[in-house]
Image 1 (cartoon, rainbow, N blue to C red):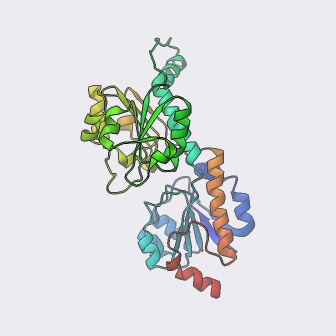
Image 2 (image 1 turned 180 degrees about the horizontal axis):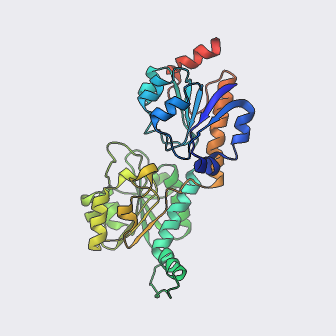
Image 3 (image 1 turned 180 degrees about the vertical axis):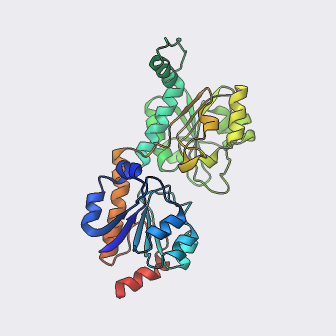
Length: 330
């Protein structure tokens, strides 16, 4: 059996991997994170030194020292799609396979974007907090989504799912994406400046790249119509948080909904989350049983493939997996 180390801390193990763990135990010798928190890379090297596979929670980086320091390691399997914190080059130089999970998070993440939009529109959280404090809430005026314009920056899987849901609610959807034509699905494709100027809600759903870092900055916010709202469920680094704070303070930006940010594990930072007019959730977009189980089981599927001499699905660097090939032929 492959000796497999699961990096999830106890809280994350229960939430994200608990239901898949019995399946993994049937096909692998499993070693669990012994601490009640995320491991540092030196700690991970220490605890996983005798393991063949690492199944990594999204908060576990794959740093270069891990791949050089764990000489027995054959594969690093991320139970998330994002591998931006994995040094794939270092893994390849050391002959370690890297693979990621399936995109099972799409419905869950699109739905939390919709939830944040509805909360901002109808002041759900503010009124709920008042009632829980024993305060009679004021009649805060809201607005309906029907007839509003939502601008989607990027037209990947989440945007496509969300666009259909918004259209069913009577929301006009406009899209900007230099690589994908949303017109084939009946949505109007516009330039970024026009999208920012027309939209009541702006949702940056672009991939995180050096080009999209701080995509929403002072200049972009200035182009947004006064009183518009911003919702981010993609990556925290898409927003220049200082610029967003200034736009909230001035009233130019009427509200912000965020499930991601620049704090630990992509959670919203306190600097924005504690401001009036902000609705924040702690990176819950993929935290549904449906998605958590699917991503955990994708790692089990990958371990099963490794044990029978097959490259697992969603491998990133299969040609560089020299350690794995040597293990298969030993």
